[in-house]
Length: 87
Image (cartoon, one colour):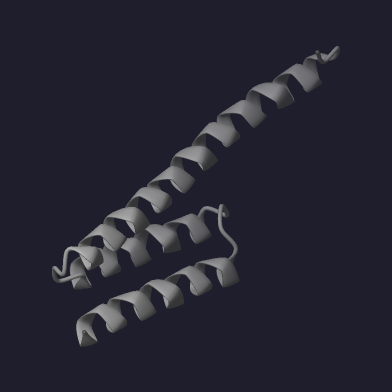
């Protein structure tokens, strides 16, 4: 346990930040899973893809994902959607 009051405050802040970061990461994962389900069920995935891009970009703006990681995720999702549209 922390001894100083500043260390106690830092622990409180860390817990809050961790909870927010986990919530955003969970939202990203859920959105990507929904997109994959839409692709598997052969539905139109364009709306879900734009929603996934929006959520991923929000994660970048909040500093939870790095820019290149987000771009990689978006590129892979786009590939999946394009491949499903062709078949």
